Length: 246
Image (cartoon, rainbow, N blue to C red; front, top):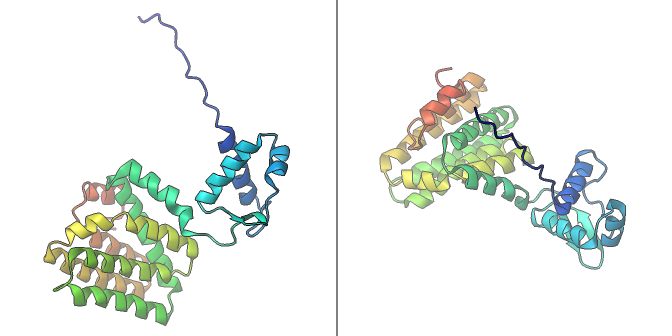
């Protein structure tokens, strides 16, 4: 029997900069800070938070880098009024660093894609459906002559059109961030013409499902669209989340 006493790991305290950014984030979540609202000056923030000015300055740089606040010359620092594309960069980098095209990432895409397609089915206008149709046709028309990278972009454009039909800016940003992570693998897959043709057929099934407003048909169309992709563990993922064959 090992007589060596057990030792707990020391608790890692977050840095002061992390605590400041967390405090500002919490204030936004609770509605204590509003979009467009001016933040106190650096000296005043340091006084209110009981920290040094250098830590406040670094925290504001972090928040500015990810698009939460903006600095206006001669005026001060403000909470941004609308989300910017930069806000999702940390999410995208975290996914890229942590997974590559793994089963976890495929699972995330399946869940996100089903969700935004279901929302689009209930929110899309006639003009939205026309844009989705145009995006699908653009890929169809390019199959025989476009290079694989252009075809991959056209494939993404189809998904972007569906995302736009949700009329939800946050869903659009998250959906685009997730879909864009697959650009490289889609592009490589499209080096084979038959794979592009399968994507064209899958888009047609998705459009039909959107028109039907049937959630089961939408889910089936999304799952079927991924069955011919080269990603590892996809069958395991689809079975795991109980969508395959539902």
